[in-house]
Length: 468
Image 1 (tube, rainbow, N blue to C red):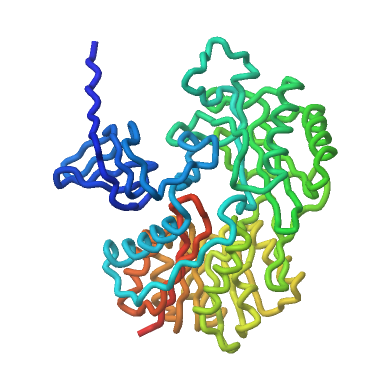
Image 2 (image 1 turned 90 degrees about the vertical axis):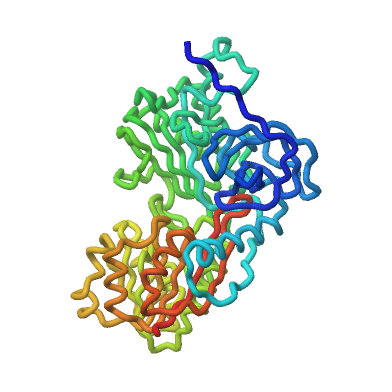
């Protein structure tokens, strides 16, 4: 029988600062120690979970003396749910840490030459700020310490909530989530109770069995709700019974969809979304413009902060009304249309066809006639021939996925040589990598972080570049 390793407990560790990925830092005998869920000023006993030559990782074993800054987490799921890890950290310290994260990625790690970073734009709402959440059904929810799995009934073992950390098959049953305003919690709890009462089976991801898979709740600032319910197979009577019940109980649901997904993964990007009742979309208003949001549409998940983000991008684009603008990774065309009144022509490119369909509908609804949209993989659409056919861009606005840009896209941008580039990113690390590839031809003239996700370590960042 293999021996269990003796746990290493480091005592009276003083937490010094916040690091990347939401972890805090201490130093032990010259080695860096990263600790999850810690606050600067905490004195902790830390259980080491990983030990390397120059660093260690650990979790809090006990709090010897809490920091004067430490707050009591407001969510009952804190510490198990993988989200909102910065609840113990005062919001002002969260902002400082995000500002530092941008500097670290661009300068300390990326070795880029940048001007002084503008103060981060804080979020007006630090709870209930999301307009979209996805919850997962599980026939085998996360079992809490102290619970006896053998004594639980099948119904008591069911959960509807979020995946837990690194456990792909574990779902934490959520009672109250602080991320999305009501009726989000009420809808989720109603569906769970209804499903248990009517003996609907919850999904088992390991066995690919069960009827109910996911729900996606979206809302707009007007309080309207879109609900998408994902089933594993067709049972017409059961589908109708659930959807009718939830529709009747929640008049705020103005758009009700369902999806039948029999695949082994939860993505519905390649699945048909079937409109069951109500409007085919909800709409978001921004500065007199209206944007259509369908079940597959990409829209910034913090609607109020999206306005600050797009305003910052437009300001840094420094448009005069005469420019040809390319909006890469345009989504539903929000940034493209937001800047269109100050440009002569805007060309938007996006991978998701449904998003481009919405972008065209948005432009028509907003009576914008100087925006043209194209669907396809960016590296395949944005070519030298495409630019020759549609005009060389004076300004490029880039808002890529978290992984950043494909090298072929960077190459075409360098060949196109726009006068100015505005790079919007949800990942300063991949942004720094891409900016380094542009550094021979471009100078970074402004850096503007924006906090889109309070209580988390994530930060959005906007950089302005000017051709040398």
